[in-house]
Amino acid sequence: MDPTQPTYDPLLGAPPAADAAALARQAADLFTTLASAAAQEYRSLSVALGGGSTPKALYELLASAAYRERIQWPLIHFFWGDERYVPADHADSNYRMAYEALLARVPVPAANIHRMATDSPDEEAAARAAEADLRDHFKLQPGQLPRFDLILLGLGDDGHTASLFPGQPAVEVTDRLVVATPPGRLPPPVDRLTLTLPVINHAAHVVFLVAGAGKAAALQGVLHPVAGAALPASRVHPTAGTLRWLTDQAAAGSLR
Ligand code: 6PG
Image (cartoon, rainbow, N blue to C red):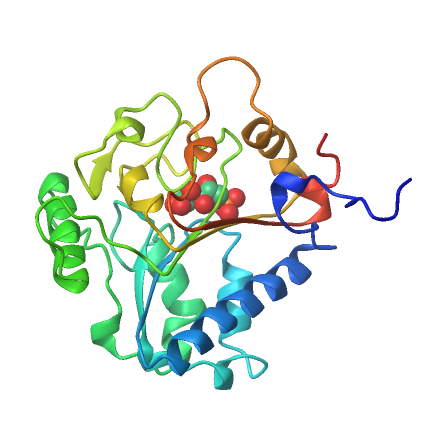
């Protein structure tokens, strides 16, 4: 084997980590690098957090003694890439997971936490409110897209990301920033709010966190799609930003 050739799929952009804990460290180092760069340039950092279970290890690591002192938390504004349409204290809430694992444990001003409100029965109004928050924070002119410094994404076994589920209309939306969408086929079976692809693809840095053997088939299908409709995660291609796949061996070790 040619030692100069990478021993991993070059589409990943980085070798798979040994395991989920090493993956969390890779992601925490990247997060810290971006936060430090923002601090050195005296600017804030806008981050859209990923949901589901994979990012929890990253969030807990960032709140740990190994990282928390290296980050100027008041400079960071936290948003979510998507949210389950459940109360903020519900076990399935992405906000609750991130709040408990990270935001309650570091000095982030409450005004910097931009929860997608899911308290009203009117999901469309909630999506519009989330859009209004983005327009206010990013000081958007009509038709402009928010440019997140960092968007963290997960990958569903069916190739979804955020709450952009295969075959659903939300995947094709190009004139909205946030939309309400029905559940996909994977649990939890609740409606969602999600950033749209144009917003995701306008970010400066998009990072997928993918861990576990259960994601191997989806990752193969996303990075090496066969004929047929591209999976939603395959359509994440930042137009003027970077895309990184942070994976572990279990998820990416058998990529061909
Ligand atoms: C959500 C997520 C979703 C998630 C993937 C992977 O609200 O569920 O945003 O896109 O990232 O389904 O979830 P796991 O990390 O739990 O496997």
